[in-house]
Image 1 (cartoon, rainbow, N blue to C red):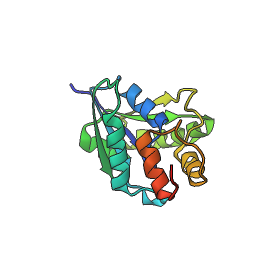
Image 2 (tube, rainbow, N blue to C red):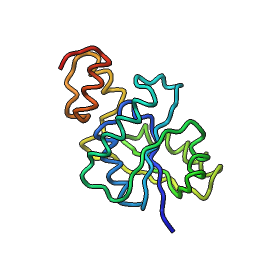
Image 3 (cartoon, helix red, strand yellow):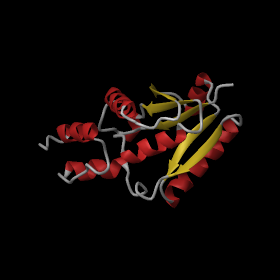
Image 4 (cartoon, rainbow, N blue to C red):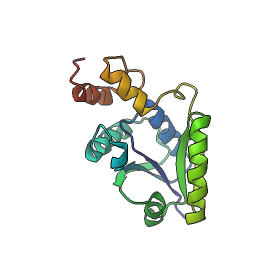
Length: 166
């Protein structure tokens, strides 16, 4: 049986921390779906299509993929989407204790809704524990150097959004 995993997120924008989790998750399943959430409630900087394109481009440049990786967008309840895709697990990245509290509650609810789908937590590498898309957007909007935290194509798109020349 093919093991399918999903790594969901808003990816607004995708960071090197996300890519590190994707690479590690790809070693644990036969097929990994990176699922870009539409989630307009979070008021994303990039449209769903822009985020999907950025994620696809960054993943195409990953050098060490453990399995086939596809990128899709979704608008529905994650558990419903996972069932539709035949996924057996959902990957979540954890950076800090504050992440765990939120993820713990979500995992409990997801387990009630779909006990057949496991949640797998992957701790962020110490190199990426403090990196968040929100911080990246704030630093970038103020002209700070974000090159260490995102790929060149993401940096370029962010600078264009903020109308800052590189």
